[in-house]
Amino acid sequence: MVTETKEAKNSNAKTGTLLVKKALPQMLKSGVIMDVVNAEQAKIAEAAGAVAVMALERVPADIRANGGVARMSDPELIIQIKEAVSIPVMAKARIGHFVEAQILESLGVDCIDESEVLTPADEEFHIDKSKFQIPFVCGARNLGEALRRIGEGAAMMRTKGEAGTGDVVEAVRHARTILGEIRKLTVLPKEELMTYAKNIGAPFEIILQVAETGKLPVVNFAAGGIATPADAALMMQLGVDGVFVGSGIFKSGNPQKRAEAIVKATTFYNDPAVLAEVSRNLGEPMVGRTVQSLSEAETLAKRGW
Amino acid sequence: MRLAVLALQGDFAEHAEMLHACGAEEIVFVRRAADLEGVDGLVIPGGESTTIAKLTGNTTDPIFDTIIDKAKNGMPVYGTCMGLIFLAREIEGYSQGRLALMNIKVRRNAFGSQKFSREESLSIPELGAESFPLVFIRGPIIISAGADVDVFASVAEGIVMCRQGNLLATAFHPELTEDTRVHAFFINMVKEYLQEKSSKKDSTEVPVTAGRTLATAGRS
Figure (tube, rainbow over the protein chains, first blue to last red):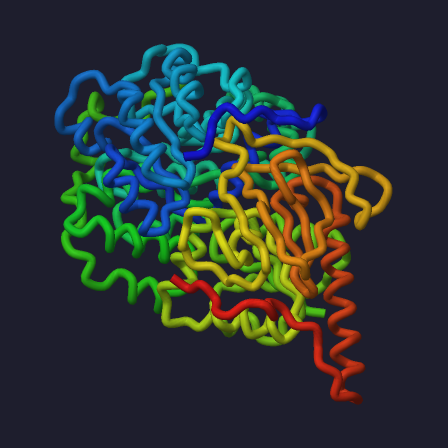
């Protein structure tokens, strides 16, 4: 275990800068981040080639099935997971719950997911993420939502999708919406940008940046409903930088094999022969639930503002 | 000159942009052995070293052995962060797959978790008078290097830049900065290699080879 007390000895060294926070997700690109609920699952994920693990108390499918208030994990569990693996460890805090985020930062997690999968703690405001030394990832359904989170200091974005369903339809919708809105933004004349920013509720400065570069200023992953290698490759071909897989792995019949297959599919997303090979004999996928069958109260993606 | 970036996982796009900014015209992304054909220099980007070990070790594609063969025949290779770990002969505490081309021993996550990731600047004589911006992201450190390794830069924790013949390694990420000097230095290594190769056609001179002190590569 690496000591956590080491101080930067060079006098000009700076930690927690925006560059340093945005860089961690850059190292995870073309990779798979896997939800894990204990150290044993974290080891399986690492051995399968995950670039990071997301520690949480219950995977979204169980949160859905069991109901109740979903909160940050027990710190003991996060410590055990950190000790079990050498890859980055992320953990989820409730939307707006900046004290959960403070606790996760003090535990030494590498990135915090301010997540709609947990029960929101604030129905109006998100966490001021710029205050923290470590990066945050947040979910979004459209460009306005993504740019508001980036304005608050998020160093990484992901689609919300509809977690815990095994149905990729919402992740596709959100990726197409965000990437499509970016494409449109690049062809708008400059005099229309302020009104556009107002209409989608996004910070004007970031709108200018996206209009010029044609991409988000942070790494953008897919999440929410990815359950198969083909789902992961679909999201990559749509143009995201990598994928989160939640319930899809450890709610399936053969987690190790499925995890390895999704890792390969994310790298070789453009190669149908590889995708066919890795998709063979994976055992039972997670049972899943169509997003259409969910009632209004059961959808998680609408959480966040 | 055809340059390549290993594009299995990590920040390979950022490296390609840097090579492009240095004037490189032909840059290819390498995901399988066949992509390495005709390549004169390879960059191994930042990313997760356990992931790259998995993607190169557990496959029927001979990408792993092809990189080793080409490097041993003099092709310049530059590894950053994960790339440095992948090039190392020895990784402290881990037996994970690696090319084992460079005579160095590395410590993974030497700075600790992400909250200890940092940026600073340091004078590196080989890159010129102006100090160079160093960005360490859960970075490794080189804790020992063989006599055939030229150490270019160190911080309090250990060595962060070195060269061994046709192999170059940095624990930091120049591709995340605006400073192109490390990439320009690497492109110069490729130019020298190509000159040597073309002059060698008329002689029987033995080329500079990598990993001459090493027995076997550590494929897992």
